Length: 232
Image (cartoon, rainbow, N blue to C red; front, top):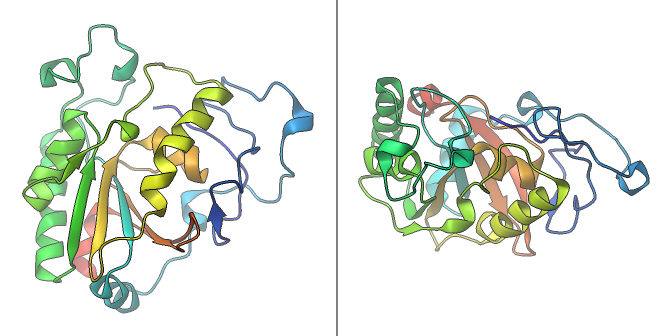
C-alpha cells in the first residue's frame, strides 16, 4: 500500500496544526510541488523510532485507561489498493481485500490478550471496510461505531490535498480522550494513520498507543505487534 514519507520527531507532541506543512510522498510517486512550503527536515521517522515502554509499565498504564489504540487491520490475503478499484463496494465484502487465516488468528489472539490482561475497552471505532470491522468482531466481539473518516479516499496515489483531508478527518478521532477508565480502540488503515503521524504502520495488525493531551494533540507512547500483546 502507499506510504506518506514525512519528517517528524515522534516523541514530541503532535498537534492538529503541528505538521500541516510537512512534505509527503506516496509510494515515492507523489512529491511536494513547492519545496519552499515544506517544513524544516529535522529527523526521518520510522516505526522503530517510536519509544517502547517495558511491558509491565505499558500494561499498567493501559489498565488505568485514557489511551487511544490505533490498529491497522489484521493481515489480509493480498495487499493492494482496492479502494481504487471501480468495482469495489463497501457493501460487498467479496469486492474487497479479505482477512487471511493469519489475520483471523491475529485478531482472535489480540482479543484474548486484552481479555486475559484485563485491559479495559470502551468505544471500538472501525472503518466501513470489511477487513476493519471483521478484525474488530474477531478481537473484541463487536464494534461500537463505523466511521467513514477512517476510510481510504478512492485513489491509488494521493496529492498533498488528499493527504491533508485524510489528516483533517482522522485527527478528531485520534485526539478525543476516551471515556474514564477505558481505552478507545480504532481499527483503520495504513494511509489514514500515516497522514496524521508520518508513520507508516507496518506490518498489518500493528497497533500504536496514543495519549490524547486534551488540547487537540497527542503523544505516541508505543507500538505493539499482534504477537506482543500476550507478552505484556
